[in-house]
Image (cartoon, rainbow, N blue to C red):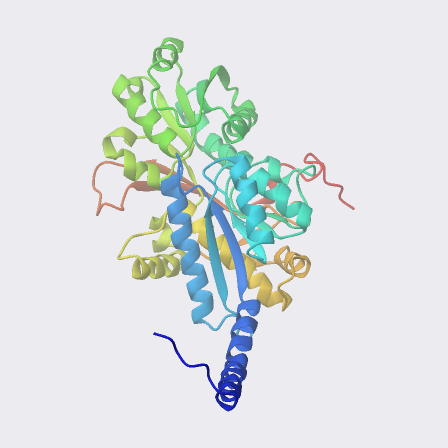
Length: 415
């Protein structure tokens, strides 16, 4: 059916109505665009797929909680925050690509995240070049060294030197002097071994072997007979995530615990939950946080209660807590700086003293490493109050700059 051509007055009227509608909508569109422009966008690249996915997903949950709390409190002068999560697939190239997209396409103000020593260095290379603040929530020694560091580089997580040192100082005097390391063959594993060996010098520790395996190894049976034949007093599992679960299970099944004390520099809550009580029984290690600290630390109780309320009674993991603190610290620095540009926020962040979930922390001026406590825990299989009650807290090494490598050793010039 053919429609008649509108007459000139009707056409003019339609154009006026259309134009009027556009003008009426313009203020709303303008305000929406302005609101979007005022949003504080934080990119969050983490390995949602791969061997560390369980830890990454908990990081996301805790980071989302930090953003939710910020927004519920009104943000800063009405500025709300938004978390943009991306999967870096535990791949340095993918991590760099996702970070570049977050900066150039999504126009994020800051980057927080990473769960691998390798990916955080590739992320840092991108953010450093573009002068975008990056707060890393994964263990690394290298990221604080002068060659990789910048004004915009911050490290919320523990580092291997600090973690391994604390565990070594607690464990080595108790269990004998002969050590074998089963090591994930990348920066995290290598740096952990270095930290143990350095701390072990004071106790006359003897390294019998450093046996290396690839990330994501499923079968450790080729390594276990050699470890047993060396007859170590201590076996140190310098690996992470699913690798820690698999190696702990197989070492237990092989019977290594009968003659050897097994320790892990980072005894992950998520790995213990996945591996079960039998596999991890008696394994000792370090952690940045355990929810059971809430009985003695008020900020831990506050954080745990908020997480429980948000996630059906679940408790946060150690690496989840890092996601929370990494976001909270950056947003607090936005408030302190009264700005969202990375330079001013970085200057405010390096002056921050805070207690988000575990007791007092601060960033060391020379390298922006968060100075914090290390918790020594042991897995338990008896007298558990509930499914979350998996560790006994044996000791807490308090925050102390003396436990870090010196600024001069890391290449920083101190005036």
